[in-house]
Image (cartoon, rainbow, N blue to C red; front, side):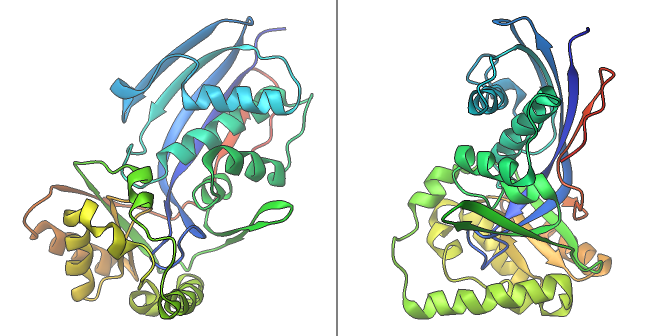
Length: 311
């Protein structure tokens, strides 16, 4: 029988969405595409094009490869050799979930390669992704699409997927510089004032209502006091753009750990106006990407003749 080859597609994500720190995430219509083929044990071939291609390792340390190995180890299956061909479109180091997408791509590839021997449930996918990524806010929307609420339980991570109001029109402003997620996290205090915590609880609850039912509330709903101001010193151009957009009524937030800026406009007209405003702000160069919410999440399909369901 010929070697199995699977094709994987994973969307970009934006986590936090302002007040929903480490909890809320949104899948966006930018995708990394990969094919993974089983080879004889011990062989490894990696071909990468697109975003970050010059800086990505071509050995066993590649995150997709490490993740595939992790899943095989999880279920006690010997490692096959692998041929990985990846075309990356999700910007690296920009707060759009590139590392989470790589983890999800590896898990979905392993799911496809193991089909017929091991069956992975949605709960398994999220559990393994969270083990590797460390938190579920990016991997949940990458896996399942739409708007996701993710939380931890004694049994492991859990999620709820919600459909976003069709009036919500995202635009992401991607800068020509990067930001380290670990650096961004290091700038946050271990404790925050009680009134700030209460503030974010109220805005997070409001944000769910705004995104699924009442987009006109998005400006108030995207206010935050837990993480963005603490990280401002590391990405001043990002915070300047966020503040300029919000001053003109646009619901702008730092995308994930930054430095990209996400605007959750309440219609295509408002989105276009946000793009025009950002173009007039001096300083950093911003690539404005008018996107849709991805409602499907990551997919895997067998392209070697067998039938492999998507996640």
